[in-house]
Length: 338
Image (tube, rainbow, N blue to C red):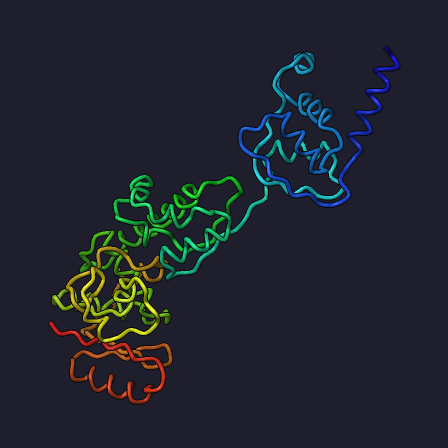
């Protein structure tokens, strides 16, 4: 008997001193018990013995030592993706899993992406069902968003996630951030602003797509606010493009004349939903427009815009910049009338 005990003790001590000779990345699924986890760790070369690891886990469990040896629950081991290092002993492995020290990934996307573009990025991060989930018309309601889609409600930011997180968990964090920013900015809005929170998000998305120049956002916001107050059509090319199912990069006069729910050349007011997911600067601009009477702007060819108060002044600038840019991209013409 003493010989058996001594042999077991020696085997256990040898196990405690054994470690992998190279890093190992291992995924532990939710619902796995200690025995299954131990077998998986052994099969992946993280530990040398599933039997002794389960014993080690039981020794670190709840209750008195005698109770633990007699079959009480082992220490709780968290599911997730783990990166075990070369030389990491079984005790260190157990401690890492006890603390839930899992691999944390980062997911980032910039301002101005639409729902389809975000879904593509999510799929590349491992959420294979991203396109299907984000196109589900019932998803916004399930996540507490009173809108036909999540367009505009996913805040551009860098998020951390772990393998095993559901796509709904990540989307909920994005929506929560949008609500926080939107409500904060809306409470501090300029006194003359009458937009609702959803309308603010729609206008912010248009501003986001209209310019990449930070100093222009509040000025472009003012043009759109002025047009809305005068019941003028917004005539924003990005809204038209958003409403085209197969846009090929060339916006034509026929496109501008074809009615869609997002064609602000043929309809008055704001589109029914945002056209992208705007950042904080565009949300701020939508609620803090410049004080100006300008009603028109045209791209000048260098990324900036030229602004005008009258249609005649605007047409003169359009002609000037279209002539100088004839062989490059078509200047965006804000041609609307009250």
